Amino acid sequence: DADVTQTPRNRITKTGKRIMLECSQTKGHDRMYWYRQDPGLGLQLIYYSFDVKDINKGEISDGYSVSRQAQAKFSLSLESAIPNQTALYFCATSGFSEPRSYEQYFGPGTRLTVT
Amino acid sequence: GESVGLHLPTLSVQEGDNSIINCAYSNSASDYFIWYKQESGKGPQFIIDIRSNMDKRQGQRVTVLLNKTVKHLSLQIAATQPGDSAVYFCAAHSGGSYIPTFGRGTSLIVHP
Image 1: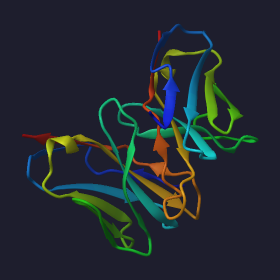
Image 2 (image 1 turned 180 degrees about the vertical axis):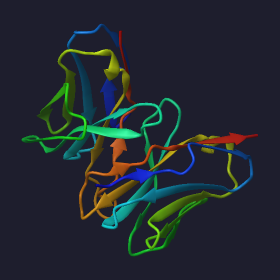
Image 3 (image 1 turned 30 degrees about the vertical axis):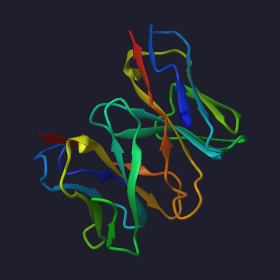
């Protein structure tokens, strides 16, 4: 079974719609992250959370919000989707023991298309 | 701020050749680096890491070299195989931060 799962895996939505992407993990990690990947631009951090009561904005948080419902669950919402939010979205966790405590473990991604 | 870049967006090699993927970083405070591999349709996966107190680290068929003087690291893959075809990212951490800066990625294409 996958350690980090993302739902849905693919989603097509219309401009103006609210959409939620969900992430669950069974790795027992405290730290969770949401990234966006566009072709040729690498991974851009949207939000991150180091524990249930900790939420932090990343470099591109505008237009997005998150909820850390539990240690194992971290959801990303697009309040009013727009076409330039079309991208591949990844959830990641970290929390391995030293010496690999910085290593991030990624989910399979959600491909979102906003028309 | 930190910027991490890769010199070549695409690298094509023949099966059996050695591959070298490069990465430059700008923040001299970067002290921990990770290489990730992203296969088509999957999330990035850890390959190898190196701390700034080292200049070389070897894994299975992979070697990472770090040159702090010129702020450059490379990933060398020996005897490249078709299964190595993927996008490779470097990520830099600074000052104990758990937040990395990722490079844009290099697409490695291995021809049989």
